[in-house]
Amino acid sequence: MKSSLWRFLAGVAAGALLSQPAVAQETGAGRSAAVTGEYRNLFREAGHPDQGVGQKIAAAWQQLFHGDSATQAVFYWAGENENGRLAYLSDINNRDVRSEGMSYGMMIAVQLDRKAEFDALWNWSRTYMYNADPKHPAYKYYSWSMNLDGTPRSESPAPDGEEYWVMALYFASGRWGDGEGIYDYRAMADELLDDIKNRGVIEGPWRSRPTRIASEGPQFHPEHKMVRFTPDTRRADHTDPSYHLPHFYELWGRWGPEKDRQFWLDAARISRDFLQKVTHPVTGLAPEYANYDGTPVTSGFNQRSSTFGPDAWRTAGNWSVDWSWWAADPRERVLSDRIQAFFASQGRYGNRYTLDGSQIDSTHSTALVATNAIASLAATDKVRAMKFVDELWNADIPSGRYRYYDGMWYIMALLHVSGEYRVWTPLGLATR
Image (tube, rainbow, N blue to C red):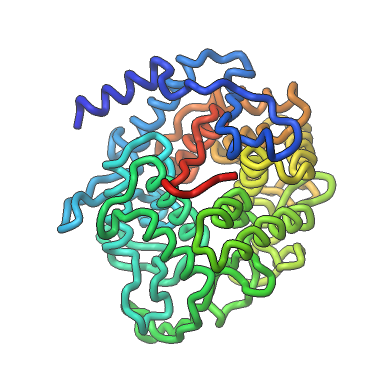
């Protein structure tokens, strides 16, 4: 294990992961990264050396996945079972394991060619988070929050976790080929993708809390063709702007089960339109939760759901990667310019705002630094965009109490901004 890790670190430090040239993407899908396989390296464009980029990525991986367990790491080995080693990725502040984090960890692992960690996270997900009982309301879905020992806190799913699992599994199939059982990655992705769209409504109790009755349906609204905040039909139905991943949907429209491919292509187009509606016309800020018409959700358990906060930070990263991969909607460039102009006007900006730009919290969070840097993939003001890239470059690797969310977005931003977060096409499928 140690020798393979150090070979990996040495390769990254030497720039082995940074072999493809940067390309200027202006307009048109013909120049998009998903089609050409050429991804911009914004660090290089900002004047940072490739070797330094590789070292920065390697250091982030080492610290967040294999650093000191008490102060640095979010990844933990957790024994083994008949399918091999197990590992989980923990939200340190809340002392739980979340579907969001597990799927993020798998995406990071496949992008960095770390199959052992990928498989161990997937094994833990299937062993503890997967609901296999046909009578369970979350049947074929994954519980979104678990205790560290694998017992559930919440047995309902959070659709962003399923979205990232599907994409990470397809990429694993493309990068490593398919294995057997739960490691038949493409089959697992196809099955989960079919379920999140087509699974019917099931009403019933949770295993851990029999008095808790849920009624779970599909994770995408069949008429609106948008991702739901929750598929629990007993709760108010709405969406989360940061769950909208049109760059993923475009791939599912090419790679997923054939009967649903048009649905996913429609979902990509609809999400691009939705992002225009849900963001403020001056600041570019999105709310944490929104109705399907793009208006903010102003009631419910999250009393700040109508403001720009941690969930919503991700939204700019999503539309910007969509532009980078597909160059399908030039309006995404306007959104990146808009949100970067707002944050540039703030100086050392905070992490929560009203949508019209009034600051609520002055904390300066690394995860927001990260997503603002990703927004540079779509921005047209290159001088201003590179300032956000440089802020990411100068940020420390997150440690301590809040290292989970800050850390995951820090390392994903390093990969996006360096051009190392890529599409891995499964054998027999096409990206064009």
